[in-house]
Image 1 (cartoon, rainbow over the protein chains, first blue to last red):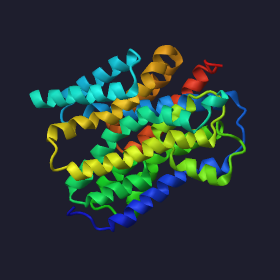
Image 2 (image 1 turned 30 degrees about the vertical axis):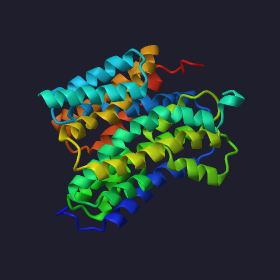
Image 3 (image 1 turned 120 degrees about the horizontal axis):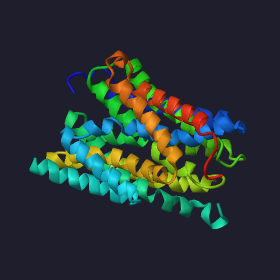
Image 4 (image 1 turned 135 degrees about the vertical axis):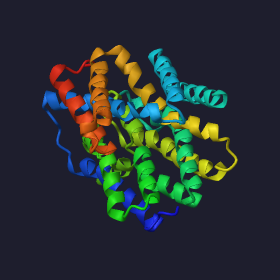
Length: 104
Length: 235
């Protein structure tokens, strides 16, 4: 923690405040029902767009090596493709990665 | 949503996969903070008050790199601006008569995963459903962080590294099954991932921070898709 020049507690509280405002301001101040079919469809697609962009390409640098990350990602995609549950997919990916990191 | 499917217990059940998924990711966060030299309780304090994966990781990282308050706040803001879109989207699904205090409470529990699960439910989202959905993940996130902070020294480093995949495996498990069922969803993901990859690797865009990259990919991905494929499939 050589570089720390601010109070960690205050910094964390400010992070919490900023994060909370992004969630609460729309929820509290926007109560109108959106009627536009375009905007409705837009919001329907939003989570998939966000989660897709959060995952790729960052997943390939998620762990120690690109190779193990690609393998772990492939395992997760294949299991999810076959409709396996979220917890099963996550545990399998971690296990495969762990074995790989031990071997490689 | 039927009457028996709208309450706290149903929410709890729907939150179980998220709860299970948050333990290893929270754990990873606890590990990261503890191994950086900050006291483990700072990690738990962060998880209790922030309840967000990418924002916490990024915020603590630049804190450790010597950033000031403003830079830390801006980074957190940019990474978490997507919650504005999610919260806006949820305003269309929550009970219209939900009280102010209840809105303030459930706002705290909006994460990528609780949002993804809540937004695919049929019908209106009640306060009891949302609190059931959010309580498990909240406890798992903070509990996982505490565990990670406490055992950081006893853990084989390979396991810590392997856990880096947990967050992404969860995301993949959330988006792939709907994409298999609906080609439009696959299209949405393909467009946003394409934009994300271009912004990440094409040198011209190297000035775009991670937070703005996600926001741009999400806005263009969902915006373009809604224009290309206008109908909601399930209705």
